[in-house]
Image (cartoon, rainbow, N blue to C red; front, side, top):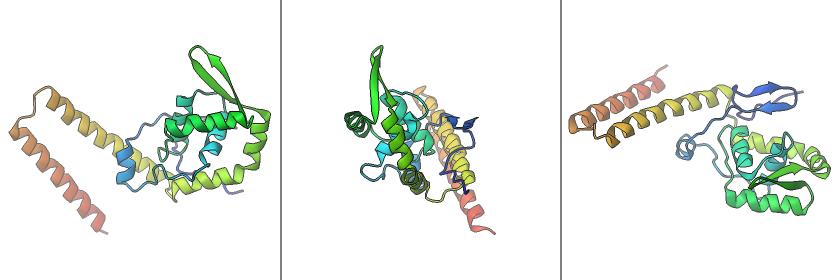
Length: 192
């Protein structure tokens, strides 16, 4: 049986059918920058991503959005405007149930929901594959690590700016360093 990773990070932990995903928050602009699919999930497909998330444990809406983002390696994060109406529809169809815990609504998969998810498993696998667009695990890790380094650089620059430590001489040096780095990366990519 051929297993697909669907762009999922090696940082996934767990065993058997219980999975815990390493939290990776990626900037939406970075996914766009590297040509990731972003939010192009066909209408109605989010319901299967939600059912898949709830197969592991009960969650509130925000956790569902985070889980889908993590399971898709940061390639797709549904908006609250998509998730909450879909949760209501799934509840109306009796595929999920909800209960109040404190000031939050926790959603759980019903037996009917589990059966629906099992029947639609091939479609769900296709959704994950489409989102991955053939990205290998190594490519996803490379982009993740690159994202982290770029964000670290932006934070350093931003912190210095907000603390009033960026003068024209420093900004010129930073621009020159970034331009040199871009040129060097271009040379590496053009080389054999």
